[in-house]
Length: 371
Image (tube, rainbow, N blue to C red):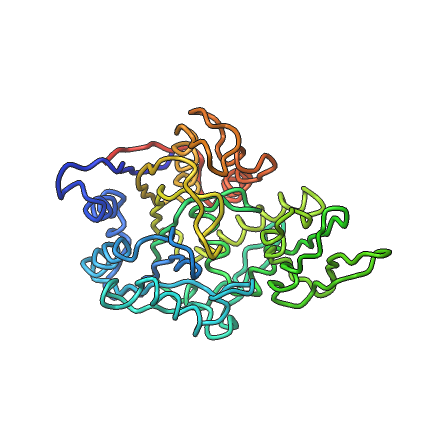
């Protein structure tokens, strides 16, 4: 059973501020114990897509930076470039967005490094020998780091069900080619639903979508020989005409996420800490260029050295909440009900936890310790 440390957001004076609670969690979870002098320590973060405002506040990241320095290690704040076409597809644009969102040295007190290089070609093959992958492509600067603190904003996700520590490791530590390996499904177009609006054509990073004539009308068509399975068209379609054809594909997708998460920490399994933020819990991930309304109240912050345990605890705490009416949460509002299933009935979020435990990434059994 793994320890998961928890602080809620109740506060009556400075010692209960969020910045103080982050420092307290860092100490209680024992992160300083695995940091050696001069360790090059990655702080894995998501800088948020331009237009999104639910990403983790850089002021919170600063608290972790300062604690790492206090332990004698050398922190850097990092993420990898995206597979989809967006504002973070290469390191120049990615760093620009990070700076716009406040991730600069004055605020965070550490350098920002895009771990997979200028065009996402800086990676290493990590051997894992599992069901879906024998090797996984992991950003070189993640592999080369001595230790890591993974800071994750927990929220919904259109294909993974939810995103927390495991998904932050898997997609977040992989270059574009590694992200493509994890997706490796191909969406299909329901021509009865398609309204030929062209949004999917505009966002496709590989120009795999075009119009095709069906009698007197034209509909979107996906060339599966060109498609890289990024899923951006699925998220972008306003009438839900694009979907993953086989539900088993989504289940396998989430299993591949768990395998990549394991690869991301290989070689430093005992030198990784996790901090999950249960606030601004939205329908979609921070890769979207907007932030929707939260589906439940802000809950608190968790810390652990076990990514499966911290994600399991996060899901349990979210499910205990009374869901907000009038949001994207259409069902399961009552405390105790599965909130991510209320967002997406066919979600496969628990696969990443169950399969992650099966392959040795961590344990679902946890003890929640309030700090």
